[in-house]
Image 1 (cartoon, rainbow, N blue to C red):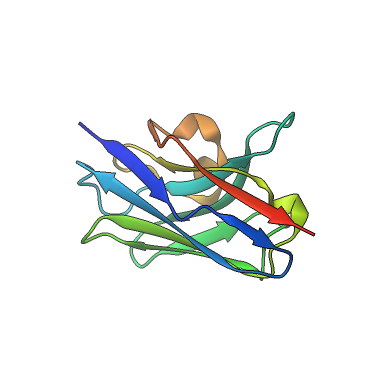
Image 2 (spheres, helix red, strand yellow; image 1 turned 60 degrees about the vertical axis):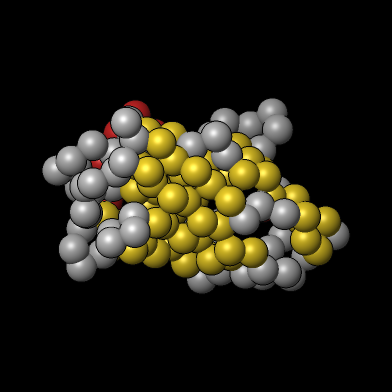
Length: 128
């Protein structure tokens, strides 16, 4: 059984940094889509960043490009979201997601419906 566990959410001030981790228990696939999504109160869930393939290819939402970095360690398996220059608009619940095997590509990996496994979320609050 695959289970995803996020950690690292916290309350920080504008300009601060956080490192989110996602441990994928029971997940044996090496390189299909994995992603971070986020959902702010009253808003739809949106893609933050996704990663797939070996070697890894990453894609980012325009709003986080240059500030966030996604990475994965397939030997763990663990996925990381390093966030810097945080702003109040980054405040949201952040969710880790993972797909089934042999699922790749920028378009495929950007769709929430691609993902079979989701974590419970970790809260990020950025105050001004």
